[in-house]
Image 1 (spheres, one colour):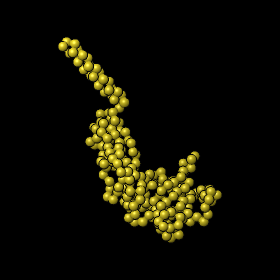
Image 2 (cartoon, one colour):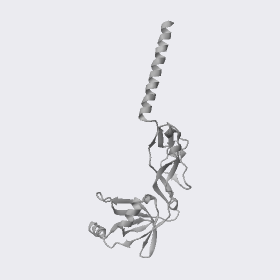
Image 3 (spheres, helix red, strand yellow):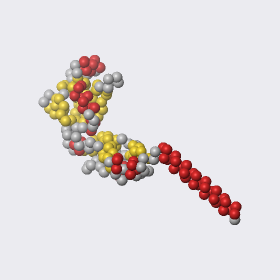
Image 4 (tube, helix red, strand yellow):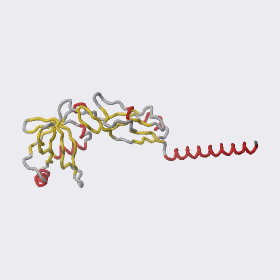
Length: 215
């Protein structure tokens, strides 16, 4: 899992659209910390720092320690909003967490050793059905990714949830053996194979008819 990252925040004494616009003009963005049986706490964070963290990846699976007025709180991002034109962050929601607490997160799926897959070597295409899987995990043990090895995956094979090795303490929230990815034949190769099968069936049919005629 990613290391806990530290953030410095300042308290917001005003909320609302006007106050939020004033913060953004000063290079900050509004955020809120909620949950944990405590009142919601409005805070302000550096806009540049948060933009770097969001676009670095794994933002919503990273645990942060937010320092506010000398006190520290462990939190995890639950949602954020981006400016529709500039794509810069304009608001972030954080959830308070306690050590050992289980939370629900979406963890990205990474496919390893694609060059070693016999299916891909023979022209197959990796068809990804799920780019992320929702897990329930301890807040201090969130995996960076779910890694799937394609070394022995051949053309026509499917990778299901039951084949995934999860980290200790993690559980999938979906209780069925769903498909994560497949190795599919290229469109041209599939059409050629279908045409070949059709021709073989017609030839067999013609041979059977000839045999009946001779009989």
